[in-house]
Image 1 (cartoon, rainbow, N blue to C red):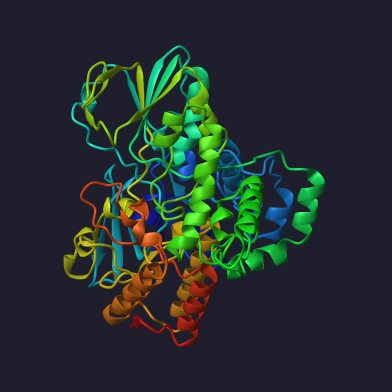
Image 2: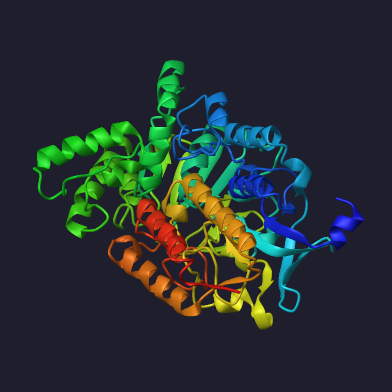
Length: 535
Protein backbone atom coordinates (compact mmCIF):
# COMPACT_ATOMS: atom_id res chain seq x y z
CA UNK A 1 0.00 0.00 0.00
CA UNK A 2 1.60 3.31 -1.07
CA UNK A 3 1.60 6.60 0.83
CA UNK A 4 -1.28 8.01 -1.23
CA UNK A 5 -3.53 5.14 -0.25
CA UNK A 6 -2.62 5.66 3.40
CA UNK A 7 -3.67 9.30 3.22
CA UNK A 8 -6.90 8.74 1.32
CA UNK A 9 -9.77 7.35 3.39
CA UNK A 10 -10.64 3.75 2.63
CA UNK A 11 -14.19 2.55 2.30
CA UNK A 12 -13.69 -0.10 4.96
CA UNK A 13 -11.11 -1.27 7.48
CA UNK A 14 -11.58 -4.85 8.74
CA UNK A 15 -9.87 -6.00 11.94
CA UNK A 16 -8.76 -9.63 11.81
CA UNK A 17 -7.85 -12.14 9.08
CA UNK A 18 -9.49 -15.31 10.32
CA UNK A 19 -12.56 -16.97 8.79
CA UNK A 20 -14.63 -13.78 9.25
CA UNK A 21 -12.10 -11.25 7.98
CA UNK A 22 -11.22 -13.21 4.84
CA UNK A 23 -14.82 -13.68 3.75
CA UNK A 24 -15.64 -10.05 4.58
CA UNK A 25 -12.77 -8.87 2.37
CA UNK A 26 -13.96 -11.11 -0.46
CA UNK A 27 -17.47 -9.65 -0.24
CA UNK A 28 -16.20 -6.06 -0.05
CA UNK A 29 -14.19 -6.59 -3.20
CA UNK A 30 -17.30 -7.87 -4.96
CA UNK A 31 -18.96 -4.55 -4.02
CA UNK A 32 -16.04 -2.64 -5.54
CA UNK A 33 -15.11 -1.17 -2.18
CA UNK A 34 -11.57 -0.17 -1.25
CA UNK A 35 -10.77 -2.16 1.88
CA UNK A 36 -7.85 -3.29 3.98
CA UNK A 37 -7.65 -5.99 6.64
CA UNK A 38 -5.42 -5.38 9.66
CA UNK A 39 -4.06 -8.57 11.23
CA UNK A 40 -1.85 -8.87 14.32
CA UNK A 41 -0.31 -12.18 13.22
CA UNK A 42 2.17 -12.68 10.41
CA UNK A 43 -0.31 -14.74 8.41
CA UNK A 44 -3.99 -15.59 8.05
CA UNK A 45 -5.87 -18.05 10.25
CA UNK A 46 -7.20 -16.25 13.31
CA UNK A 47 -7.70 -18.69 16.17
CA UNK A 48 -6.23 -21.48 14.03
CA UNK A 49 -3.02 -19.48 13.59
CA UNK A 50 -2.43 -19.05 17.32
CA UNK A 51 -3.79 -22.31 18.79
CA UNK A 52 -1.07 -24.70 17.64
CA UNK A 53 -0.94 -26.86 20.77
CA UNK A 54 -0.74 -30.63 20.24
CA UNK A 55 -4.17 -32.15 19.82
CA UNK A 56 -5.85 -28.92 18.71
CA UNK A 57 -8.73 -29.73 16.42
CA UNK A 58 -12.24 -28.55 15.60
CA UNK A 59 -15.29 -30.00 17.38
CA UNK A 60 -17.52 -29.44 14.33
CA UNK A 61 -17.13 -31.93 11.49
CA UNK A 62 -14.79 -30.73 8.74
CA UNK A 63 -17.38 -30.97 5.97
CA UNK A 64 -19.51 -28.47 7.90
CA UNK A 65 -16.77 -26.33 9.47
CA UNK A 66 -15.91 -24.75 6.13
CA UNK A 67 -17.10 -22.02 3.80
CA UNK A 68 -20.26 -22.57 1.78
CA UNK A 69 -20.19 -19.35 -0.29
CA UNK A 70 -18.31 -20.84 -3.26
CA UNK A 71 -19.33 -24.25 -4.60
CA UNK A 72 -16.07 -24.78 -6.51
CA UNK A 73 -14.12 -24.20 -3.29
CA UNK A 74 -16.14 -26.68 -1.26
CA UNK A 75 -15.92 -29.29 -4.03
CA UNK A 76 -12.18 -28.94 -4.64
CA UNK A 77 -10.98 -29.04 -1.04
CA UNK A 78 -10.61 -32.55 0.41
CA UNK A 79 -10.67 -33.02 4.17
CA UNK A 80 -8.64 -35.95 5.45
CA UNK A 81 -10.41 -36.49 8.80
CA UNK A 82 -13.88 -36.23 10.26
CA UNK A 83 -12.67 -33.57 12.70
CA UNK A 84 -9.88 -31.49 11.19
CA UNK A 85 -6.68 -30.82 13.10
CA UNK A 86 -5.28 -27.31 13.50
CA UNK A 87 -2.59 -27.83 10.81
CA UNK A 88 -5.21 -28.95 8.28
CA UNK A 89 -7.55 -26.06 9.14
CA UNK A 90 -4.65 -23.62 8.74
CA UNK A 91 -3.79 -25.13 5.34
CA UNK A 92 -7.42 -24.69 4.31
CA UNK A 93 -7.54 -21.03 5.37
CA UNK A 94 -4.27 -20.36 3.54
CA UNK A 95 -5.71 -22.06 0.46
CA UNK A 96 -8.74 -19.75 0.60
CA UNK A 97 -6.50 -16.68 0.96
CA UNK A 98 -4.45 -17.73 -2.07
CA UNK A 99 -7.38 -18.90 -4.17
CA UNK A 100 -9.11 -15.52 -3.93
CA UNK A 101 -5.87 -13.50 -3.91
CA UNK A 102 -6.74 -11.91 -0.57
CA UNK A 103 -3.27 -11.28 0.88
CA UNK A 104 -2.60 -8.15 -1.20
CA UNK A 105 -5.19 -6.28 0.89
CA UNK A 106 -4.09 -7.63 4.29
CA UNK A 107 -1.58 -5.83 6.48
CA UNK A 108 0.10 -8.50 8.62
CA UNK A 109 1.98 -7.85 11.89
CA UNK A 110 -0.39 -4.92 12.43
CA UNK A 111 -2.11 -5.07 15.81
CA UNK A 112 -4.84 -2.46 16.20
CA UNK A 113 -4.40 -0.38 19.36
CA UNK A 114 -7.23 2.10 18.96
CA UNK A 115 -10.18 3.06 16.78
CA UNK A 116 -11.65 6.54 17.10
CA UNK A 117 -14.79 8.01 15.58
CA UNK A 118 -14.41 11.33 13.72
CA UNK A 119 -18.03 12.47 13.76
CA UNK A 120 -17.40 15.67 11.78
CA UNK A 121 -15.90 13.83 8.81
CA UNK A 122 -17.92 10.61 9.31
CA UNK A 123 -14.76 8.51 9.47
CA UNK A 124 -13.07 5.95 11.66
CA UNK A 125 -9.35 6.34 12.37
CA UNK A 126 -7.53 3.20 13.44
CA UNK A 127 -4.03 3.25 14.90
CA UNK A 128 -1.73 0.26 15.16
CA UNK A 129 0.72 -0.51 17.95
CA UNK A 130 3.44 0.25 15.40
CA UNK A 131 2.17 3.80 14.92
CA UNK A 132 0.44 3.41 11.54
CA UNK A 133 -2.95 5.03 11.00
CA UNK A 134 -5.79 4.04 8.68
CA UNK A 135 -8.99 6.00 8.04
CA UNK A 136 -12.21 4.61 6.59
CA UNK A 137 -15.92 5.30 6.37
CA UNK A 138 -16.73 1.94 7.94
CA UNK A 139 -14.96 -0.23 10.50
CA UNK A 140 -15.78 -3.94 10.72
CA UNK A 141 -14.64 -6.08 13.63
CA UNK A 142 -13.68 -9.63 12.71
CA UNK A 143 -11.60 -10.13 15.86
CA UNK A 144 -13.29 -13.40 16.80
CA UNK A 145 -14.98 -14.60 19.97
CA UNK A 146 -12.10 -16.73 21.24
CA UNK A 147 -8.99 -14.73 20.44
CA UNK A 148 -7.79 -13.00 23.63
CA UNK A 149 -6.10 -15.59 25.88
CA UNK A 150 -7.00 -15.47 29.56
CA UNK A 151 -3.87 -15.56 31.70
CA UNK A 152 -4.81 -15.81 35.38
CA UNK A 153 -2.73 -13.47 37.51
CA UNK A 154 -1.20 -16.15 39.71
CA UNK A 155 1.15 -14.71 42.28
CA UNK A 156 4.75 -15.27 41.26
CA UNK A 157 3.89 -16.18 37.67
CA UNK A 158 6.96 -14.39 36.30
CA UNK A 159 9.31 -16.02 38.78
CA UNK A 160 9.05 -19.52 37.28
CA UNK A 161 12.47 -20.68 36.09
CA UNK A 162 11.08 -23.26 33.69
CA UNK A 163 9.09 -22.82 30.49
CA UNK A 164 5.59 -21.29 30.62
CA UNK A 165 3.06 -21.69 27.79
CA UNK A 166 -0.56 -20.79 27.02
CA UNK A 167 -2.48 -23.04 24.64
CA UNK A 168 -3.78 -19.96 22.79
CA UNK A 169 -0.26 -18.57 22.22
CA UNK A 170 1.57 -21.75 21.29
CA UNK A 171 5.09 -21.48 19.83
CA UNK A 172 5.13 -21.89 16.07
CA UNK A 173 8.07 -24.30 16.26
CA UNK A 174 6.20 -26.59 18.67
CA UNK A 175 7.31 -27.90 22.07
CA UNK A 176 9.05 -31.14 23.02
CA UNK A 177 8.07 -32.30 26.52
CA UNK A 178 10.11 -35.51 26.42
CA UNK A 179 11.54 -36.32 29.83
CA UNK A 180 10.06 -33.23 31.48
CA UNK A 181 7.92 -32.75 34.56
CA UNK A 182 4.90 -30.82 33.23
CA UNK A 183 1.94 -29.14 34.89
CA UNK A 184 -1.23 -28.31 32.96
CA UNK A 185 -3.63 -25.79 34.50
CA UNK A 186 -7.17 -26.10 33.17
CA UNK A 187 -9.40 -28.90 31.90
CA UNK A 188 -11.76 -27.13 29.48
CA UNK A 189 -11.75 -27.77 25.74
CA UNK A 190 -8.06 -26.92 25.24
CA UNK A 191 -6.97 -28.90 28.27
CA UNK A 192 -9.01 -31.93 27.26
CA UNK A 193 -7.29 -31.90 23.86
CA UNK A 194 -3.71 -31.20 24.93
CA UNK A 195 -3.46 -33.35 28.08
CA UNK A 196 -3.43 -36.79 26.33
CA UNK A 197 -0.66 -35.63 23.97
CA UNK A 198 1.56 -34.19 26.70
CA UNK A 199 1.03 -37.33 28.79
CA UNK A 200 2.55 -39.42 26.00
CA UNK A 201 5.74 -37.33 26.04
CA UNK A 202 6.26 -36.07 29.57
CA UNK A 203 8.15 -37.91 32.28
CA UNK A 204 5.46 -36.83 34.75
CA UNK A 205 2.27 -34.84 34.15
CA UNK A 206 0.32 -33.09 36.89
CA UNK A 207 -3.13 -31.85 35.82
CA UNK A 208 -4.41 -29.00 37.99
CA UNK A 209 -8.19 -29.18 37.79
CA UNK A 210 -10.60 -26.70 39.38
CA UNK A 211 -13.78 -27.86 37.61
CA UNK A 212 -14.25 -31.32 36.09
CA UNK A 213 -15.90 -31.12 32.67
CA UNK A 214 -18.19 -33.28 30.63
CA UNK A 215 -16.56 -34.70 27.53
CA UNK A 216 -17.70 -37.25 24.98
CA UNK A 217 -15.38 -39.24 22.70
CA UNK A 218 -14.86 -37.71 19.24
CA UNK A 219 -14.76 -41.06 17.47
CA UNK A 220 -12.56 -39.33 14.94
CA UNK A 221 -11.55 -41.23 11.81
CA UNK A 222 -10.17 -40.71 8.32
CA UNK A 223 -12.84 -39.64 5.82
CA UNK A 224 -13.71 -42.20 3.18
CA UNK A 225 -13.56 -40.69 -0.34
CA UNK A 226 -16.88 -42.28 -1.29
CA UNK A 227 -18.58 -40.94 1.82
CA UNK A 228 -17.17 -37.48 1.13
CA UNK A 229 -18.31 -37.54 -2.49
CA UNK A 230 -21.85 -38.51 -1.48
CA UNK A 231 -21.95 -35.70 1.08
CA UNK A 232 -20.62 -33.13 -1.38
CA UNK A 233 -23.20 -34.15 -3.96
CA UNK A 234 -25.85 -32.93 -1.52
CA UNK A 235 -23.98 -29.88 -0.25
CA UNK A 236 -26.75 -27.36 -1.08
CA UNK A 237 -29.24 -29.40 0.95
CA UNK A 238 -26.86 -29.81 3.88
CA UNK A 239 -25.91 -26.14 3.94
CA UNK A 240 -29.51 -24.96 3.90
CA UNK A 241 -30.38 -27.35 6.72
CA UNK A 242 -27.49 -25.92 8.74
CA UNK A 243 -28.66 -22.34 8.16
CA UNK A 244 -32.15 -23.14 9.41
CA UNK A 245 -31.09 -25.35 12.31
CA UNK A 246 -30.81 -24.43 15.97
CA UNK A 247 -27.03 -24.57 16.11
CA UNK A 248 -25.88 -24.16 12.51
CA UNK A 249 -24.98 -27.84 12.04
CA UNK A 250 -26.92 -30.01 9.62
CA UNK A 251 -25.59 -33.26 11.07
CA UNK A 252 -26.98 -32.76 14.56
CA UNK A 253 -30.10 -34.70 15.52
CA UNK A 254 -33.41 -32.83 15.48
CA UNK A 255 -35.09 -34.08 18.66
CA UNK A 256 -38.81 -34.78 18.72
CA UNK A 257 -39.33 -36.26 22.19
CA UNK A 258 -38.83 -35.26 25.80
CA UNK A 259 -36.31 -37.32 27.75
CA UNK A 260 -39.05 -37.84 30.31
CA UNK A 261 -41.65 -39.37 28.00
CA UNK A 262 -39.60 -42.46 27.17
CA UNK A 263 -38.55 -45.39 29.34
CA UNK A 264 -35.22 -45.51 31.17
CA UNK A 265 -34.16 -48.37 28.89
CA UNK A 266 -34.94 -46.35 25.75
CA UNK A 267 -33.03 -43.34 27.11
CA UNK A 268 -30.00 -45.45 27.94
CA UNK A 269 -29.99 -46.88 24.43
CA UNK A 270 -30.31 -43.38 22.89
CA UNK A 271 -27.51 -41.97 25.04
CA UNK A 272 -25.34 -44.97 24.19
CA UNK A 273 -25.87 -44.32 20.49
CA UNK A 274 -25.10 -40.62 21.05
CA UNK A 275 -21.90 -41.54 22.87
CA UNK A 276 -20.82 -43.84 20.04
CA UNK A 277 -21.73 -41.23 17.39
CA UNK A 278 -19.03 -38.96 18.76
CA UNK A 279 -20.53 -35.49 18.61
CA UNK A 280 -21.36 -32.51 20.79
CA UNK A 281 -24.89 -33.10 19.48
CA UNK A 282 -25.21 -35.41 22.51
CA UNK A 283 -27.18 -32.68 24.32
CA UNK A 284 -29.63 -32.51 21.39
CA UNK A 285 -30.86 -36.11 21.65
CA UNK A 286 -34.04 -35.00 23.45
CA UNK A 287 -35.95 -31.72 23.28
CA UNK A 288 -35.54 -30.79 26.93
CA UNK A 289 -31.98 -31.72 27.94
CA UNK A 290 -31.03 -28.04 27.97
CA UNK A 291 -34.40 -26.87 29.32
CA UNK A 292 -35.46 -29.18 32.13
CA UNK A 293 -33.28 -30.11 35.10
CA UNK A 294 -34.80 -33.57 35.51
CA UNK A 295 -34.32 -34.34 31.82
CA UNK A 296 -30.80 -32.95 31.98
CA UNK A 297 -29.96 -35.25 34.89
CA UNK A 298 -30.70 -38.30 32.73
CA UNK A 299 -28.14 -37.17 30.12
CA UNK A 300 -25.63 -36.05 32.76
CA UNK A 301 -25.84 -39.31 34.68
CA UNK A 302 -25.07 -41.38 31.58
CA UNK A 303 -21.80 -39.51 30.98
CA UNK A 304 -20.91 -39.71 34.66
CA UNK A 305 -21.42 -43.47 34.49
CA UNK A 306 -19.09 -43.71 31.50
CA UNK A 307 -16.40 -41.75 33.31
CA UNK A 308 -16.64 -44.16 36.25
CA UNK A 309 -16.29 -47.08 33.83
CA UNK A 310 -13.25 -45.68 32.00
CA UNK A 311 -11.14 -44.37 34.93
CA UNK A 312 -9.81 -47.30 36.95
CA UNK A 313 -9.06 -45.49 40.22
CA UNK A 314 -12.46 -44.79 41.86
CA UNK A 315 -11.13 -41.76 43.76
CA UNK A 316 -9.73 -40.19 40.56
CA UNK A 317 -12.95 -41.01 38.71
CA UNK A 318 -14.94 -39.21 41.40
CA UNK A 319 -12.75 -36.12 41.12
CA UNK A 320 -13.20 -36.18 37.32
CA UNK A 321 -16.99 -36.40 37.59
CA UNK A 322 -18.69 -33.06 36.80
CA UNK A 323 -20.96 -31.42 39.36
CA UNK A 324 -22.93 -29.14 37.04
CA UNK A 325 -25.65 -29.85 34.45
CA UNK A 326 -24.36 -31.11 31.12
CA UNK A 327 -24.40 -28.52 28.36
CA UNK A 328 -24.47 -25.51 30.68
CA UNK A 329 -20.74 -25.25 30.08
CA UNK A 330 -19.26 -26.02 26.68
CA UNK A 331 -19.38 -29.77 26.07
CA UNK A 332 -15.92 -31.08 25.21
CA UNK A 333 -15.03 -33.59 22.51
CA UNK A 334 -12.00 -35.75 23.26
CA UNK A 335 -9.65 -38.48 22.14
CA UNK A 336 -8.63 -40.72 25.05
CA UNK A 337 -8.97 -37.95 27.63
CA UNK A 338 -10.37 -39.91 30.57
CA UNK A 339 -8.21 -42.92 29.64
CA UNK A 340 -5.14 -40.71 30.15
CA UNK A 341 -5.73 -40.74 33.91
CA UNK A 342 -5.04 -44.49 33.92
CA UNK A 343 -1.39 -43.78 33.00
CA UNK A 344 1.18 -44.14 35.79
CA UNK A 345 2.88 -40.85 34.87
CA UNK A 346 -0.31 -38.75 35.22
CA UNK A 347 -1.55 -37.27 38.52
CA UNK A 348 -4.77 -35.29 38.94
CA UNK A 349 -4.52 -32.39 41.40
CA UNK A 350 -7.90 -31.08 42.58
CA UNK A 351 -7.38 -27.35 43.14
CA UNK A 352 -10.99 -26.91 44.22
CA UNK A 353 -9.89 -28.68 47.41
CA UNK A 354 -6.39 -27.16 47.63
CA UNK A 355 -6.27 -24.01 45.46
CA UNK A 356 -3.14 -22.80 43.70
CA UNK A 357 -1.42 -20.42 46.09
CA UNK A 358 1.30 -19.24 43.74
CA UNK A 359 3.73 -20.12 40.98
CA UNK A 360 7.23 -20.42 42.39
CA UNK A 361 10.67 -20.55 40.83
CA UNK A 362 10.48 -24.33 40.85
CA UNK A 363 6.83 -25.06 40.03
CA UNK A 364 3.32 -24.67 41.45
CA UNK A 365 2.44 -24.37 45.10
CA UNK A 366 -1.08 -25.15 46.25
CA UNK A 367 -2.36 -24.63 49.77
CA UNK A 368 -1.44 -28.29 50.39
CA UNK A 369 2.04 -28.68 48.85
CA UNK A 370 4.48 -27.64 46.12
CA UNK A 371 4.90 -29.49 42.81
CA UNK A 372 8.32 -29.23 41.16
CA UNK A 373 7.96 -28.73 37.39
CA UNK A 374 10.08 -28.08 34.31
CA UNK A 375 7.20 -26.65 32.24
CA UNK A 376 3.76 -25.20 32.91
CA UNK A 377 0.97 -25.14 30.33
CA UNK A 378 -1.94 -22.79 30.96
CA UNK A 379 -5.03 -24.20 29.26
CA UNK A 380 -7.06 -21.40 30.81
CA UNK A 381 -9.08 -20.37 27.78
CA UNK A 382 -10.05 -16.90 26.61
CA UNK A 383 -11.65 -13.65 27.63
CA UNK A 384 -14.47 -14.75 25.36
CA UNK A 385 -16.75 -12.77 23.04
CA UNK A 386 -15.90 -9.29 24.37
CA UNK A 387 -12.25 -9.49 25.42
CA UNK A 388 -10.60 -8.83 22.04
CA UNK A 389 -12.93 -5.88 21.32
CA UNK A 390 -12.50 -4.32 24.76
CA UNK A 391 -8.74 -4.79 24.37
CA UNK A 392 -8.81 -2.14 21.63
CA UNK A 393 -9.39 1.44 22.73
CA UNK A 394 -12.57 1.99 20.69
CA UNK A 395 -14.10 5.46 20.98
CA UNK A 396 -17.49 6.26 19.44
CA UNK A 397 -19.55 9.43 19.17
CA UNK A 398 -18.49 12.07 21.67
CA UNK A 399 -15.43 10.02 22.62
CA UNK A 400 -17.52 7.36 24.37
CA UNK A 401 -15.41 4.31 25.25
CA UNK A 402 -16.74 0.89 24.21
CA UNK A 403 -15.05 -0.69 27.23
CA UNK A 404 -16.88 1.74 29.51
CA UNK A 405 -20.21 1.23 27.75
CA UNK A 406 -19.81 -2.51 28.20
CA UNK A 407 -18.48 -2.28 31.75
CA UNK A 408 -21.58 -4.00 33.18
CA UNK A 409 -21.88 -6.38 30.23
CA UNK A 410 -22.03 -6.11 26.43
CA UNK A 411 -24.94 -4.33 24.74
CA UNK A 412 -25.46 -4.69 21.00
CA UNK A 413 -28.39 -4.75 18.61
CA UNK A 414 -28.57 -8.19 16.96
CA UNK A 415 -24.88 -8.53 17.85
CA UNK A 416 -24.22 -6.47 14.70
CA UNK A 417 -23.90 -2.90 16.00
CA UNK A 418 -23.76 -1.12 19.35
CA UNK A 419 -25.49 2.22 19.82
CA UNK A 420 -23.26 5.29 19.86
CA UNK A 421 -20.67 3.74 17.53
CA UNK A 422 -21.93 4.61 14.02
CA UNK A 423 -20.60 2.67 11.02
CA UNK A 424 -18.94 0.10 13.30
CA UNK A 425 -20.11 -3.43 12.48
CA UNK A 426 -19.45 -6.52 14.60
CA UNK A 427 -19.17 -10.00 13.07
CA UNK A 428 -20.52 -12.60 15.57
CA UNK A 429 -20.75 -9.94 18.25
CA UNK A 430 -22.43 -10.38 21.65
CA UNK A 431 -26.15 -10.98 21.29
CA UNK A 432 -25.75 -13.22 18.23
CA UNK A 433 -25.58 -17.06 18.16
CA UNK A 434 -21.76 -16.97 17.72
CA UNK A 435 -20.19 -19.49 20.13
CA UNK A 436 -23.45 -21.43 20.57
CA UNK A 437 -23.30 -22.37 16.89
CA UNK A 438 -21.06 -23.63 14.13
CA UNK A 439 -19.28 -20.30 14.01
CA UNK A 440 -18.55 -20.55 10.27
CA UNK A 441 -22.28 -20.73 9.56
CA UNK A 442 -22.82 -17.68 11.75
CA UNK A 443 -19.86 -15.82 10.23
CA UNK A 444 -21.20 -16.27 6.71
CA UNK A 445 -24.64 -15.00 7.72
CA UNK A 446 -23.19 -11.89 9.38
CA UNK A 447 -20.77 -11.12 6.55
CA UNK A 448 -23.53 -11.43 3.95
CA UNK A 449 -25.90 -9.27 6.04
CA UNK A 450 -23.25 -6.55 6.45
CA UNK A 451 -22.30 -6.65 2.76
CA UNK A 452 -25.95 -6.32 1.70
CA UNK A 453 -26.35 -3.48 4.21
CA UNK A 454 -23.35 -1.56 2.82
CA UNK A 455 -24.73 -1.99 -0.71
CA UNK A 456 -28.09 -0.64 0.47
CA UNK A 457 -26.46 2.38 2.14
CA UNK A 458 -24.50 3.20 -0.99
CA UNK A 459 -27.50 2.75 -3.27
CA UNK A 460 -29.60 5.14 -1.19
CA UNK A 461 -26.89 7.69 -0.48
CA UNK A 462 -26.87 6.96 3.25
CA UNK A 463 -23.57 7.85 4.90
CA UNK A 464 -24.18 7.01 8.55
CA UNK A 465 -25.77 4.05 10.32
CA UNK A 466 -26.15 3.45 14.03
CA UNK A 467 -28.15 1.16 16.29
CA UNK A 468 -31.13 2.80 17.97
CA UNK A 469 -30.64 2.66 21.74
CA UNK A 470 -34.24 1.60 22.42
CA UNK A 471 -33.97 -1.22 19.86
CA UNK A 472 -30.68 -2.27 21.43
CA UNK A 473 -32.27 -2.37 24.88
CA UNK A 474 -35.14 -4.50 23.56
CA UNK A 475 -32.71 -6.91 21.89
CA UNK A 476 -30.62 -7.27 25.07
CA UNK A 477 -33.86 -8.18 26.84
CA UNK A 478 -34.65 -10.72 24.09
CA UNK A 479 -31.19 -12.27 24.50
CA UNK A 480 -31.71 -12.53 28.25
CA UNK A 481 -35.15 -14.10 27.80
CA UNK A 482 -33.81 -16.64 25.30
CA UNK A 483 -31.05 -17.65 27.71
CA UNK A 484 -33.40 -17.84 30.68
CA UNK A 485 -35.69 -20.18 28.75
CA UNK A 486 -32.82 -22.68 28.96
CA UNK A 487 -30.54 -24.06 31.67
CA UNK A 488 -27.50 -22.34 30.11
CA UNK A 489 -27.21 -19.44 32.60
CA UNK A 490 -27.03 -21.93 35.47
CA UNK A 491 -23.56 -23.05 34.41
CA UNK A 492 -20.72 -20.94 35.78
CA UNK A 493 -19.28 -20.80 32.26
CA UNK A 494 -17.25 -18.54 29.99
CA UNK A 495 -20.54 -17.84 28.16
CA UNK A 496 -21.16 -15.71 31.27
CA UNK A 497 -17.58 -14.48 31.60
CA UNK A 498 -17.10 -16.62 34.73
CA UNK A 499 -13.56 -17.68 33.77
CA UNK A 500 -12.20 -14.11 33.93
CA UNK A 501 -11.77 -12.50 37.34
CA UNK A 502 -13.77 -9.29 37.65
CA UNK A 503 -15.73 -9.78 34.42
CA UNK A 504 -19.48 -9.10 34.83
CA UNK A 505 -21.64 -12.21 34.83
CA UNK A 506 -23.87 -11.68 31.79
CA UNK A 507 -24.95 -14.42 29.40
CA UNK A 508 -23.51 -13.05 26.16
CA UNK A 509 -24.60 -15.12 23.12
CA UNK A 510 -28.14 -15.47 21.72
CA UNK A 511 -29.57 -18.87 22.67
CA UNK A 512 -32.70 -18.72 20.50
CA UNK A 513 -31.18 -20.66 17.62
CA UNK A 514 -29.41 -19.89 14.34
CA UNK A 515 -32.52 -20.38 12.21
CA UNK A 516 -34.70 -18.13 14.38
CA UNK A 517 -31.98 -15.50 14.48
CA UNK A 518 -31.71 -15.43 10.68
CA UNK A 519 -35.46 -14.84 10.42
CA UNK A 520 -35.18 -11.87 12.79
CA UNK A 521 -32.25 -10.35 10.88
CA UNK A 522 -34.02 -10.81 7.53
CA UNK A 523 -37.23 -9.24 8.85
CA UNK A 524 -35.31 -6.23 10.14
CA UNK A 525 -34.11 -5.62 6.58
CA UNK A 526 -37.58 -6.14 5.10
CA UNK A 527 -38.84 -3.52 7.57
CA UNK A 528 -36.37 -0.96 6.24
CA UNK A 529 -33.58 -1.75 8.72
CA UNK A 530 -35.90 -1.44 11.69
CA UNK A 531 -34.02 -0.55 14.84
CA UNK A 532 -31.21 1.21 13.01
CA UNK A 533 -30.78 4.95 12.52
CA UNK A 534 -29.93 5.80 8.90
CA UNK A 535 -28.90 9.32 7.95
